Image (cartoon, rainbow, N blue to C red; front, top):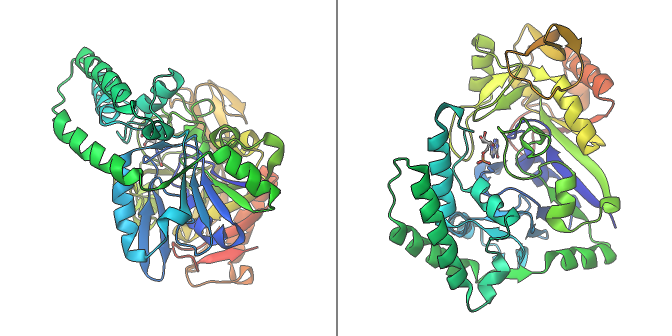
Length: 423
Ligand code: IMP
């Protein structure tokens, strides 16, 4: 049985949580494969809005098993809070939520190191969510990390102490003003570890292999977006994991040949949180309208998101790197009311017109070249059928499909589960 993949194609916040939630009824297992609590997946149903950080977005569906894969990094403290927020839903967490023994743990000192590193960078800071993601993946690839499975061993606290001591020396090395009470942070951490230990730890690659043999349906849920990928994103303004399709293979132990559908999620315009290049960014009232109507504030940090027109050069790149087979366009409703819409179809790169994403897309090198399309005025939020969509929106969609060479199968017209149009 094949594994389907769901990924964000821009700089994150495309609305992956909503689509996973919509699609979950078709899957037996939903698996997160990378990232950590830097993610914020927002789900809305029955008038309730819920934000998940580490827990997969299938957790509210009755029969779905939710798996936190080996490629994910877990902060036990944030995880415990996520579990507390779920307690009112009466879910059988021990049965519904499985954790890979090979997933790495975010320690309190990883968070402190993130803060120290960002403070030391000054103006060149990444704009990290400061959840300790970068330092944890550094320890993973540096072969120093602590994994969930270590918690089942007797001496894991010795390993913890040695690593935390090293981190403290590293924090001193940064020589920045960071105040912290490690004893207090550790008390909170060790309490949260006890809660984590009550959950079900598994050898997830084996579990997924068996599940495939039993013909279970599996959806791998990506976090962040392709332009934040550690290899293919706008480095160094990226996150520290592979957010693109290949990350699902390494982050779950699924063989490349087993991946079937690759669902690519994008917003009808573009947003970005944190620092880094953004060629189509708007600093005018159009950008302000997108931010206001789209409620563009980070789900994890609450920071305002930068907004701009859709960048097809970047989107094509993401479609190709991921091998996207179906597209899903989010927040079409936010663009209602614009007279004209612009879509970036090429860049002027150092005086030359190019249609691919170059190594360096800093504003001094790249000016977007736009194609103008007609806007639409109708309120889409009550629409339920593709036949109701306004003509100009259909033209917008057809233009994108032709450029991207992949069909747009879902158009989302609002945050609620029900505001989803299938084409
Ligand atoms: P970090 O992964 O928290 O260190 O953040 C690195 C960069 O990725 C920053 O620009 C963050 O704003 C961005 N980022 C991380 N996670 C998300 C996300 O879930 N959505 C959008 N941006 C994110």
